[in-house]
Image (cartoon, rainbow, N blue to C red):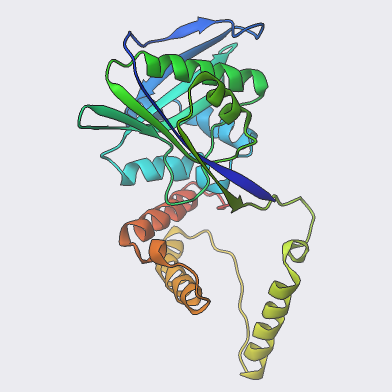
Length: 273
């Protein structure tokens, strides 16, 4: 499924006090919101946020483990999040990071390069409540600020609601492909004819060379950690052969981040889907 990216920046100078707020959003149910600042404070909500990201079908790069891993690899950017609750349950969240430079706060989505990010919300009501809470929290900041949301779906109700609450000064539309897999469907159902043909040729070359393909699953964390650098090396080499951009894979910090993401999933006994 092809999805669109939204890159937008919103600028403004505001003053006031931030804190926990509650009330109706139009005719919507009562919600409460709070701003959570810092990694320790954010980790107190790990279970609720992990569940919210899963139930809203966040892309793999925007799930809980990749997000907190990215934050750990970028310690100069302070986690700054807005959580919205309804009946005590977290129903929407803006997981952002904050940087203060030259008197200006910059808030942005924690993502690497053009990897998809996510603003989870359970429904249109919670998306609207998130937009109102985010705008209110930003306007309470006394310093000038910039909000930069990267690699989000244009069809996301939270994105639409935020653009209604805050004046968008810039947007950049692009395409970020994503495949939604259905249970029971064979992998070949999601491969193009060219890809299937390339796989068949590769299998034939392996067979003609007198070699055999060995495939197995492993849950051994040490084995997983040991093989990741080799996988990245092969991926980078093949991408270069195909003429693809390998700048991100050439970045040692990114490779370290990606290896840490795989390690986090393996440590949790989960598959990186």
